[in-house]
Length: 225
Image (tube, rainbow, N blue to C red; front, side, top):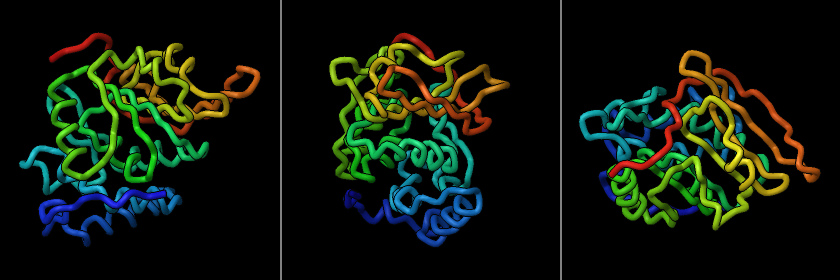
């Protein structure tokens, strides 16, 4: 199920934020191996230029990560698409996102009809993301907290997506994953990170796949305003 976004004229875009430019990005993602049409349509529809500072809006549909302040970034569209595609393997109804950031990844998931629970440690980023969700008419549940703790009172989740890299997988998050659920997370030091996809089996075991090299900001503990 997809969700119809509440789009305003500024969301539709023009020039370097126009539909033509977005369609060109989608063709690039196809060439890079993204095959799930649901994911491609969500990337095409969600106005990425509304999730970055106005001065960077003309670069929003480049296939690059961009700064969003506070030492954080909005992920490369290919990485967002790859993580989303991997997560959809388990047809999740409820997904926990660790690291709201700009809100873009959560918006893509919500546009796919997934109930998103997102946690962000930087208060200012979360407040801005919430405004973006409301503007697009997206029902995303969010809280300001240490993402490494997850959201235990709402667990288990059929899907968990982590948008910052820790030195190892966080046990608390694996514990919050439902049986047969999928967790997608970057793991490793800055110079040697891998995107891992885990599936929890009925006997408690974990099936793990390496989806390739990535570069993410570090997964930090604590909270800031």
